Image (cartoon, rainbow, N blue to C red; front, side, top):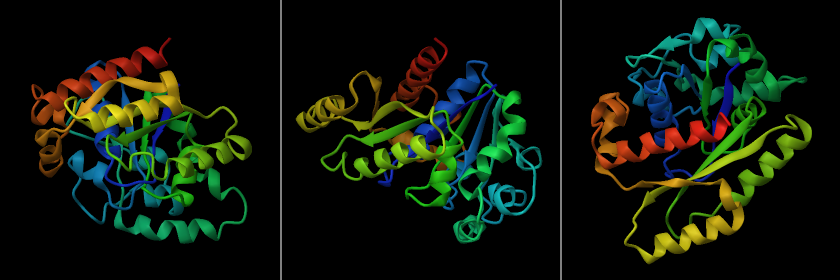
Length: 256
């Protein structure tokens, strides 16, 4: 049965999608079968995996509101063992449609993917950078949450909100959800600022902070424009090495 992990942070530009798709790619290379669910209407995870259409048919929108089954919406990617339920521009309206559902609107995704969890080792959900119903659905379906945090001054901005949301989901929707880990992104080992931010993050999260740091790396930024993860775009770059190590660290933590 798959372990379901949501990647979430209300603050945008922290490397959330980059972390989600690249961890997925390197776990796939390690022989794990991984499904990425793109719950962000911007569709960046879909683009990073080669799906550039804004009007994807049989997308996560159709899964949530159109009566499609999870099996009907899963797409293979060019990478072996890595599959995707893509986003669509229509997903922007899904929150309004879900808001009209009187019973169980927070658990639609959880119920929809239950039938396919047996087919995967990991299900990764890329959440939107907001705390609406799409994010709540993602968290309610997840066993754990990974929070990417940018190694900059405002890193902890908005963190209390995602932590409060997780706390509410734990209380009312999914009692066993936990923060699986915190990933430090855009790290510069020469910077006193980076070291100071990490110290503050470790005060809050302790050993939940992954030891692997993700550096600033131009190849990581370039890869999505080619519809590729860094694992295929430039497997020898510093960003690839970091995400390869992070996937191994994550696997070790979750398979104990």
